[in-house]
Image (cartoon, rainbow, N blue to C red; front, side, top):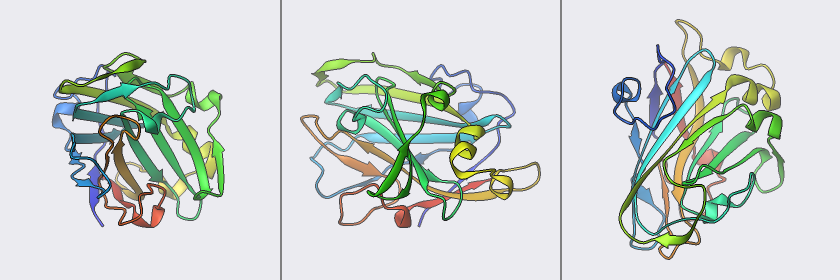
Length: 222
């Protein structure tokens, strides 16, 4: 099981996709270097960085990709079929997890799941409205981009979104001088591109299913 240490930021990210800028330039990221055996021969280079402040958490994906599509442009659409970067996270043990699935066009699918493939609840528009999402490509890409393409998504999630579904974080919210551990995984997929692939930070094993919280790694807020 891999571990990612996440540090607090003194300055709020500007949500401009500035991977090497004032805020993100000093943030250490991780690389998604495991690809499921059912993937095509296209294995994009995928990096992700994460930081946090008193308002919430910030995620930044950078993908050196090819065969890029974004056909689903509505909220809670099946964006996993597009060129998509995903963050699954479990803030509190025993209270389910969230699957942040955002395609290269910035369109989001987000559920709170308490039992994988059995009981899940879409996160409400009230909370989706409080997220901020930057995307470097157009919202819709119907004709696949076959040339090598670098794209980014960057987004903010307020602490309150998590607490609306799991209750007061209390001991699971990082505080000054006190770190906490969450569990989660980062993924990259493109189910319906001409070169489908499924990349991940922590390997999910033989079963092609990202909804395996027992395979999540550790996210340690310093």
